[in-house]
Image (tube, rainbow, N blue to C red; front, top):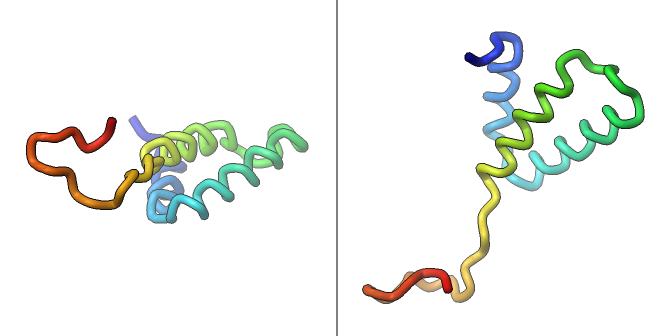
Length: 75
């Protein structure tokens, strides 16, 4: 069950593009390393951001063309 305090925040983070989400996660992680427990629930926020990052991470296509019918898209 989602935490009612963090669900709206993670919903807003879910609308960010991958580069912005990555920068936000990296900055928040570094702040948490330098000043432990500075922001309440920062560990839960980082877990949610990490999940969003992994969900948005895509491997680029080699050719950019759609696959030929019957052939594999990726080697």
